[in-house]
Image (cartoon, rainbow, N blue to C red; front, side, top):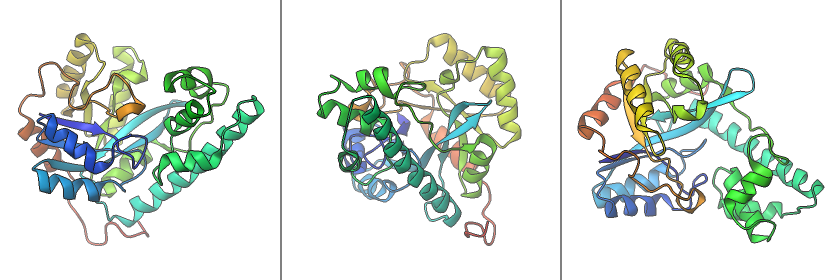
Length: 291
């Protein structure tokens, strides 16, 4: 069994990369992909622990992408080159804007009469890629809300009173960035797009033309009928079918590592091989910051 969608303290998860691998061992997983938001910082530690404990760690990243006006989607990049200069530069830009966004959210909360410490947000993030779950935890600590879910419902959800849109690239740019870094681009949790099947198929065609190579067909909260649709449409268009829990630890209750598809993924070794084979061929000079 594999779990190809996980987060650590390098972004908005609550387990360190090493602890995430340890949990994978407890869950009898033979491979995980670490797909933190806008950062590759957790991958070296996860890979070292994975080698020690016999768990394959697929280097990955999750990026938000602009879609259809003010909408957004998430795209996973698998087997990216963690030393690709251009990818690292773009990720650093995104993380800097995440910090600025956190400051703007804190300012909005203050105007709403809900003051929190920007310094404490940075402490909770532990040097990782700052996300709304970190701010939610600070709101809980300060006694403004009783839970992370309440923090989102009252202030931080999309369109909420303290919501600030994060910096992100257009979907075509995200896919290109992943592939330039030697990775495989996969649409994450398609159900969150909330599109009718016909509209989702039309959207997939556009994404495929931009270089999309896979779809996360097996997700933690997908209904069986939706999973079947993702399988069928993915196979029809020659996409790799992946699956993952979107595990965040205590920051996303009700989601457990490795528990996202009741029957398990079929032939997980073949899945990892298929992902690896879809990686673009490396070319001379690829990865320089002048790309």
